[in-house]
Image (cartoon, rainbow, N blue to C red):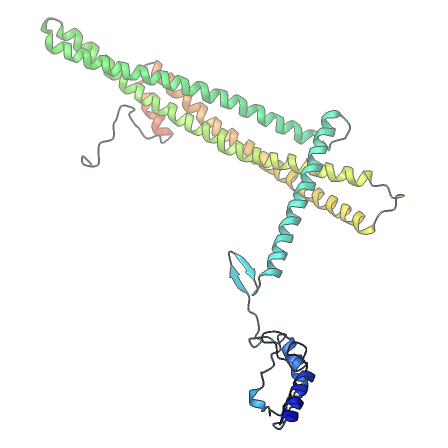
Amino acid sequence: MAERERSIHEMLKDTPSMNDSCGAVHTGTEGGSLGMMGISGSASSHIIGTGIPLSTSASLPLRNHSAPTTPMSPISPQVSNGFLTSADGSSSLIRTSASKIDSIKNWSISTYKCTRQIMLEKLGKSQRTVDSELEAQIEQLRETQRKYLSILRLTRAFSSHFQHVVVSQQSLADAFADLAQKNPELQKEFICNSETQRNLTKNGELLLNALNFFISSVNTLCNKTIDDTLLTIRQYETARIEFDAYRMDLENTKPEITQAAASLEETQRSYAHHKDQYEKLRGDVAIKMQFLDENRIKVMHKQLILLHNAIAAYFSGNAMALESTLKQFNIKLKSPNNITGSWLEQ
């Protein structure tokens, strides 16, 4: 019996520890799958050093962490925050960011070149493309706008002052009429002056309508029609600066210096693009200025005749001629003293 117990203790001593055993299973690690190498795949396998049988149902299932947990399926694009993205949203976002960066880069290069061109022109170190005939027409148009704006400012001041005169005449007519009722001995004289002031007020309101029509037409001509042409002119001038900037870059390119063919081709392409844009805008400016000149002459011819006839008829006391002038130009008669009633009165 003692020999049997001693033999069992010796067998236990000879058995390796659990931490060193090749058959030890470490739960939750990949090493656990390696420990299963000492276990037979059959149902009659035994643990080494013991007589305990190990069935296949008691073994831990091996897990391949490299395998996907979900079945593969085609990834459909999704729209998120205005961007077309895939499941991870990385590729489309990178393309969008790259496009924005390229746009900013091109804008920065163009702005730098144009600024440099302007500075070189001011310093007299660069030649600018000049169309003498077109430049003279543009300068004449700007001078015409300045003069028309001066006429517009003076006419507005005259209309404002004259409106105060009309309002004062209306108040004076009311005062004379009131005094005619309270002073019988001077009733005839007060009524005569009251009627005179009322007639002057009526004719003054007609003249104000003519002045307002003149001001509205000249304002539209100066601040809308001419401004639209000047906007195209500013675009033309910007295109001219860009064209000169890229032309200077192409001229400064030295063929003897080793340079990539792609870079030279890109410079030539940019030059051709800005040249086409410059020539297109130059043609647009010439056409717009031609139509503007015809329209300006037609509008100012009509407005100057209106202003002359209305003022001459008013200050000569010809009320019939004043009314016929306003009818001739289809001007609606509006009294500056009329106050629009509330919506309850209407």
